[in-house]
Image (cartoon, rainbow over the protein chains, first blue to last red):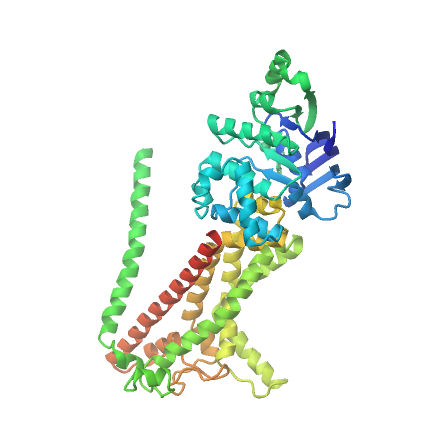
Length: 251
Length: 293
Ligand SMILES: Nc1ncnc2c1ncn2[C@@H]1O[C@H](COP(=O)(O)OP(=O)(O)O)[C@@H](O)[C@H]1O
Ligand SMILES: [Mg+2]
């Protein structure tokens, strides 16, 4: 397997509470790697450790290392990271509840594209269209780009967030239960999208459902109490008995 | 029993809401009825033509125009200092200051907010005395000094409003900018400040209103009962201002008609602040629309 991101002996504390304990995971090109575990087990924290989003909370402390392997160069996220903002751009992130800017659909793209990448207006339009097509949203919004993003349905908003992440040309995708707030059809739609996108972007996704995981994941890490307690890949993911036991342990 | 309590609470809330409306309406009606007896062009400009008073610098000796112009200039100069500075300080405290220093700055803002306006006036007055005895023997009270003291008076409102508008934003918005690769400052400027512009506006409105009505500060820092019948001619000139003129009229009127002029000035002051508020409101709305579009 060709690792793109490698997390090594990662521990995170919020104040005195240790939320992650010596976590080692890696995820690879062409794969969708899923994180599952009971609520409060540290999945979100682990995901946010990859692009250093935990740093935004007061009283957080992180030990260990996250290394990105990009075009033969290694970028370390923690010890002597040259530029945290560009590290974060390298990882496209989608949150658990749709996190659109309270602006028009177009502004949701042009604010990051203009201020992070410094693109001019025509380039912003080009990128936006390409990304919206990628996220299978273009046909639904192409006539209403000036409308408020919050007027879209939950599923559309989540695809908008995915498109916005894609428009910044990330190297990996980090998704935090992207379908948790959606209904069945909207969830399936995003799942199918992810299956297609994982060919181009290594994906690390937190999932709240074992069913979803076995449908779309190539590799699964199971978390409990801030530690990785199990690692499944390949055929193991379709071993019904094993999944059943896992489900009983977890939920 | 619980039902009964809930209903009582609902009724009480309605009564309180209607009560506020009734009080405001009563106040305005009272002012209007007293003011109506003197309301007219002469109230503003006496026997001088309005255009020569406003544009020609003609002296208005028995009209309230100089006080209106004085108040407008005062509020404008004070707001021009307090609003940007207060916003900047609020942004700093909410988004940049850390640890013990932040606690200290917050405490100082509290102290400033708790300072009575008469103290602010005394402070301005004492400043002039000090300046006279040191390196500016000709320093005197005037418009600029009054505006500076007013700005100090309203600064904490502006800081508080900005700070709490920013701190009240949902965590998800705070995470969004950085997750897209915006730097901290970019996230503050492009996402957080626009998202909190309504709260910041309410601080500006409060500041404008407070600066327009305060009497204690300007009384000690350069307001006079008659300033030659013209709008303030320079930043160091003595000036007339509506609240001070109202105060003087109320204290020294000889006839009912003079007192009615005082009520008319109160009504004008109310209208003036209302139009300042709507100016601020429309400015904020148009900025917000530009950001959202
Ligand atoms: N910003 C934070 N400050 C303090 N504690 C936090 C913070 N974020 C998460 N935690 C704590 O860390 C633990 C793991 O949370 P999280 O990573 O959100 O779990 P999961 O995503 O698996 O539900 C929880 O006990 C939670 O209370
Ligand atoms: Mg979570």
